[in-house]
Amino acid sequence: MSAATGGGRAFLTGSCTQALEMAALLLDLGPGDEVIVPAFTFVSTANAFASRGARPVFADSGPLNPNIEPSHVERLLSPRTRAICLVHYAGIACDLDAFAGLAREHEVALIEDNAHGLFGRYRGRPLGSFGVLATQSFHETKNVTCGEGGALIVNDPALVPRAEVLRHKGTNRARFLQGQVDKYTWVDFGSNFMASELQAAHLCAQLEAADRIQAARQAIWRRYDAALADWAAGHDVRTPVVPPWSEQPAHCYYLVMPTLAARQRLIAQLGDRGILAVFHYQALHVSDMGARFGGRPGDCPEAEALSNRLVRLPLYAGMTDQEVARVVDAVLAVEL
Ligand SMILES: Cc1ncc(COP(=O)(O)O)c(C=O)c1O
Image 1 (spheres, helix red, strand yellow):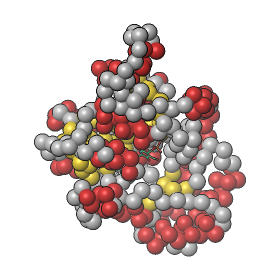
Image 2 (spheres, protein in one colour):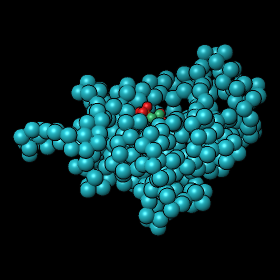
Image 3 (spheres, protein in one colour):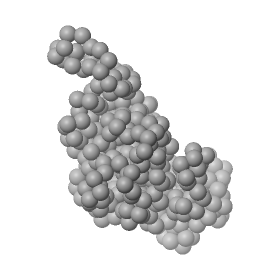
C-alpha cells in the first residue's frame, strides 16, 4: 500500500471517511479554522473537517475537468485558512506544483483526498505522496476494494506517532504492543479508526491482483475514449480531459452532457437496455449543510453544472469486450 502511494506511512482504516476524520484530528483543525475543499466532491471531504468545528470553504471546479483550480483557491485563502484538501477527480491529478506552491507560500497544509486516485501519477510521482496527509478509499466502488475500507497516508514522519494513538481510541496501545510501555492508557483524542483482519486480508489479495485489475480497467477506459470521441464532439458532450502531467488510473469514465435533460435521457435510455449509468456528487455548497457554512447557488457554477450534467459509464475489471461494446452501441444510439 505504502509503495503504491509513494512511501509515506499507510494506516489502514475502516473507510476513507475515517481517514479524513483522522486527518482533521491530526492537524488539530477546529473552530475558527477554514479548510478549502472542492464543491464537487463527496460529503466526507467536507464533513470530516466540519465535524471538528472547522469551516469548509467551497472551491469551484475548473472548466476542463472537475478538479479545483489553483487560481480560484487562491482567492478563497484567508488568514483563517489552515488546509487545502484536494480531490483528484477520477484519479486525474490536480495541478500539484501550483497547489504545493500555494500551500508553501501561505503556510497551510495540503491534504489529498485520494479516494479515486490510487495508482494515478503526477509527473511520474504517485498521487497520495504530495499532501502532508493523503486518504484512500477501498469502498466496493473503487479499483481495489475490501467492501468498506480506507487508509491514511502520513507523509510527514513527525505525525506518525500521534496517528498511531488517534486510531487506537486515543491510547498508546501501539507502544504497548511493541513492548515500549507495560500497559496502555488514555493519552489523546481518538476513536476506533481500525480496519479488521478480514478486511485487510481481502485488500491484500486485491492489491496482489492490482496489475491485472489495472490493465483491464485501462483497456476499458481507452476503449470508451476512442469509441466515443467523434460522437461526443458532434453532440457537445465533454469527455475526460487528462492534462499532460497526469497518468490517470482508470477509476471512472465520465461524460459531461450539454444539459440536465440530455443527461437524464442518456441515463433513461441506457437503463431501458439494462445498462446502469449513474450521475455523481450533488455540489456541496448548495446542500442544506453547505448553506449553513455560507454556500449559495451560483457560487460554484462549474460544480453545479457537473452535478446536473455528469454521468459515469459502467467500468469494472470483469467487464467483457461484448459488455463494453454493448455500452458503446447504446450510447451511440441515444436520442438526445
Ligand atoms: C472523493 C471522495 N472522498 C471520500 C469518499 C468516502 O469514501 P469511503 O466510502 O471509503 O468513506 C468518497 C466516496 O466514494 C469520495 O468519492
